[in-house]
Image 1 (spheres, rainbow, N blue to C red):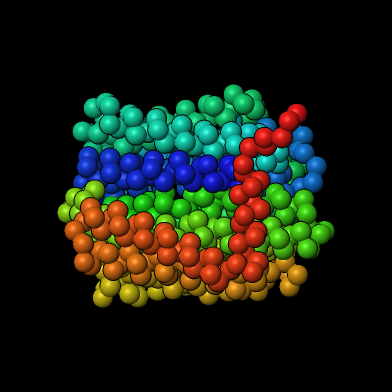
Image 2 (cartoon, rainbow, N blue to C red):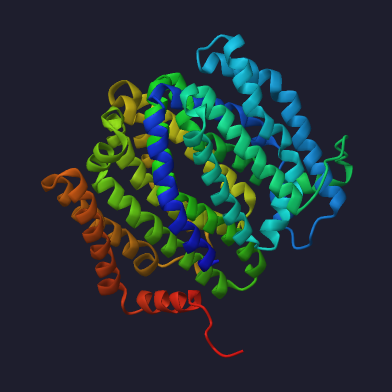
Length: 471
């Protein structure tokens, strides 16, 4: 898990930065905002999808029968087909375009949604067999293909349409590869008779996933209603940049924690070690880069992205803090889903989403562009405390070594980077502030955690090193 996660993060950082540069150079904020709104709408059926069967199959101890996975794929396919006319109408209204102009864009972007049913078996078996190395490689290839299509063809000059076509092509290609790894054709008729008990058992978790999807897409659907496409573009860009700088790693760790805790749930001591290390690494490897980015945000935007994206600086700083807390929540949430009744997390997600929507709507008139990021941050802090409390006492991460120490390291990196940004020109600030901030974070980890954290880190680094012993 560690080798795959670290390798993926090291490659994902430059690719994420390159992707953000390409998008800002070729597309205006309004074009990017319309694209984000359409992506959210066309993926809505995936939230309902297979009625929660995929997560239920991953969670169960026994591998599901092929017929059960074909039924899940069939349910996903039929939900997407039946929802298509509704998505057409909603899309035209959300982006304020005539149906004649928006319909082709929605139809093209909807192709991967219709085809997702063929990958149910792949999604289940990749997770159950912890085969995350191939999945990480596929994600990286998809990112490279996305950038190559935008930069090397004429698609970048088509505005929102270019983004739609590029996204549809690369996502469909990804689905085709997954289907080739684990072939499966969905049944034409979804026979759910024998799976009703499985659906019922996984329904709370499935509903939690739907609420999570609405939370993740809040910038798109609530931003479109409150602020308009251009503001959605700024918010989506800042959210994407902070996500690519680290939260994707936290999500990959969460995907590993879930099946691992499911296998170890009868051994509290081992579960605690898994959860503690997931929290610590998520906060360190996500929080420190995001703290550097938040401290250097103005010189970074000025040097790399252009002045027209400067209004995204303040939202990006808020999202950096939000994503750092989110990295902690992801690790805790993956464990709680296994160790506690799924209705508990459903209640947490319902309260969380209601709180952040209410805060965003209340703050929008006087905070404007910052309303949604501040609302999400304000709701995430208490959520992290609640989820940690939901874990059994024996499985909770410790405050100092697993939570507070990485936070102190991130704060040190931010302070040094912010100082460099205020006294140096953009490029010297980026180089000197980034280097000094990273060294400050490492020094804090060494000084404050040398008793127990540093030996753990060294042991894990040794595990990543190749085995040079004679065979």
